Amino acid sequence: MGLDIRVATDIDNSSDIVSKSFDYRLSRTFCTIIARYYGVSSNSEIGQISKLAKVDITRLMEMDKYPYGDGFDYSVIENEDERQRTIANAFAIMEKLKGNIDEVLFTIKALIEAVSKIENLPSLLGSSEYEVSVYLDYFGDFDKDKGDGYIGNNFGQDLRNFKQFLELAKIQGATTVWFDYG
Image 1: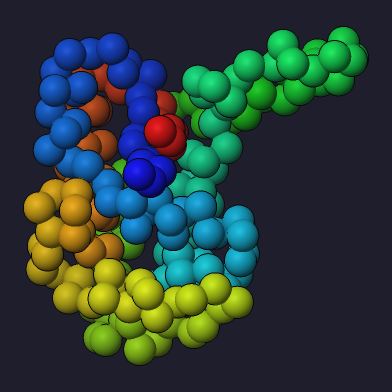
Image 2: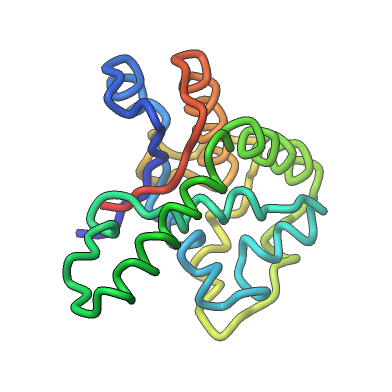
């Protein structure tokens, strides 16, 4: 068992998006590289790719901060002042990300375009305190879909799946997107 990542939207209850989103899944490796961004900061794979591609990933990484689902249960905070500050902070983050779908889509498209022009991406990724070599195959053959849409996806396939999901979500009326884990 592992942790999965999905893109959630402000219209997640739309049956059309829910039924079609299965076709645009993101791999567990993508989940890991997004999570590792905060663990190894500037030396994370996604941080390095951002620099190599000259694409600002701020809007993409902000999606990870959205207080949604289980992460929004603040009833366990016993101090009322702290609970109110935490809730206010959560609503401020939600407000900041409101309407972000176009910016996230722009970022994903820019990453796809720029990374597809980088030759031998795996050899350009520097090591971090974590085992980067495990992910070298994931970053290879960017323009080729290697997996079944989830298992075995490479970075290029995950970004293309992400882009297709965002485009479908926009057509269905979504305006805000964030990462949800499960």
